[in-house]
Length: 158
Image 1: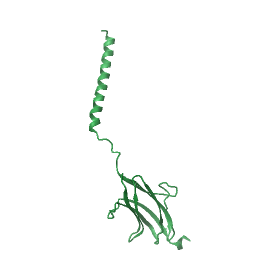
Image 2: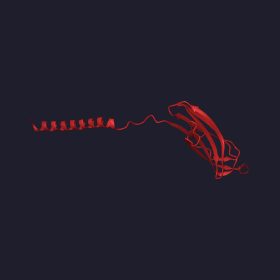
Image 3: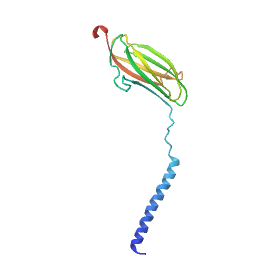
Image 4: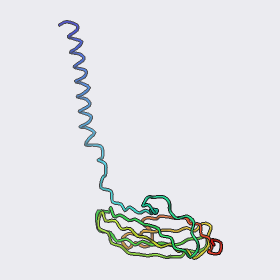
């Protein structure tokens, strides 16, 4: 056999061996590596601004005036789920609840709520907590969204 043909035969043998090893490794590791978990159960919980995007939230408000905050909850738990949406104002020395609603959502169902925020106290940094509880476990929030407001008095705003 001429040297040229032996070189080609050797080259083909190496390529065949590399492919065989690659196939063997692919089969071997395909059974050992965990499959990606596409079945995660979770809940989407977020606030959106006036244009239904996650920005342009209210920042500056006048004490006693109303501001709407749009809250979105989507159930991805793969079962009907009971939620309690709760909102409260929190400052340095006090917490004031102002909203509570119980909801039941089927899998993939979305609930959108416009929650009226009307702080009655002046605070340079008033924290507004939106707490989501799941399945009547009201001791610890399942999810939390937080909004910071600068609240000025009506006398200063005029």
